[in-house]
Length: 217
Image (cartoon, rainbow, N blue to C red):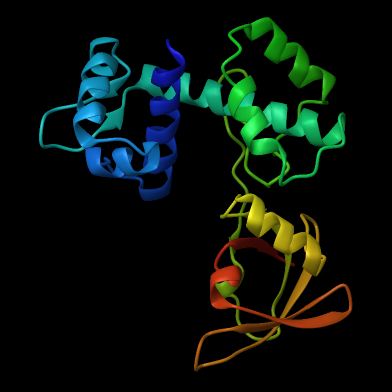
């Protein structure tokens, strides 16, 4: 596969994982930042390779071959992110763009050795699951911080928004994977949330609370 084909597969994988339904060419065009006509041309190529199910004016889904191929791309991306953070001391807001380049390395042997070298991690630095060599994923029970009720406590296990800006904001607030977050109250006016992290109370917007995944404790 070309780099472009791999990027399309990965994008379709993320879109279908989020909605659990077939996705439209417009949705793919938006995430790929291209024209719908270009998406249609690529989908035809991927369909010929038995990587997607595609019919004009209908939704798009991955075939079993397509799902496995997409998972392997995601696997490489997330393993490289772990390597960059744990071994090269990059911060979690710096690694995405670098991993975007490294994920296209073809050597399966290299990736499997990288996996073993890192101790076979099951999650990347942002809390997203890493598929194993067979495409299996260990799912984590989690919910958005915004969905908690007053006086519930959760541990931060992931982020929905992986943008550098959001991750830097979390760093400023002392929120990281493993942080214990107490949900104190929610404002009915703007749905902003008051929380307690590291013995410090702070108020965060509903948008921020809707981009943090926690596991109840």
